[in-house]
Image 1 (cartoon, helix red, strand yellow):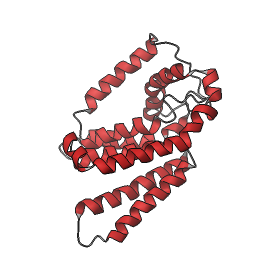
Image 2: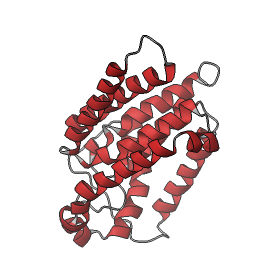
Image 3: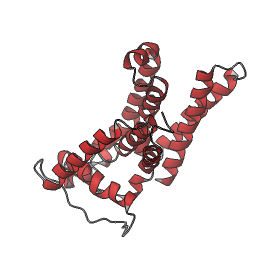
Image 4: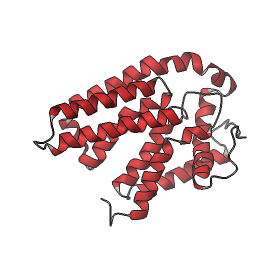
Length: 232
């Protein structure tokens, strides 16, 4: 998890350098340095692909960042100016899914599918996202390599309904926060989704799954603390 997080963050950092070089359009920014950053970002992404599943969320994170910080919520302008780039990004993501995740649905998740089932696993992830991952990030005590958590077996589970209510409240709280806060929490959801959504793994929860999403939490909570007075 630590190695995949390193490659994920490094690839995103190279993407940011290339993006700002392009957007600044300074005469001092050579095309060679821009292309070099893009190639390096793709190379790091390819290396991360061989380490862990979470890399499939990175193209989406890149698009979300570009949209939030350069178009400020203007969906129409974003789409009209970036049709080709968006199409290529999601085509690349689809290729990643077909090359890497396809085996997950038919192979690596067999044991998780037999033990948990896809729907119960997904419902459990919603509940434990709140009551395990957010909890240990805020209160990192009594950590365990093998957490004792239960499987959610239906939509009427009290813990699940409570978790959904908390998530709705969080969304309402975050939507009026600075863009960095919004991006941070979107980062967390996207980066944890590959392992904690519809692909059943044997372990319902695992602490190392929070390494990369915690980066988004840091962005989000820091921006919320600063507020719109200091951040747009």
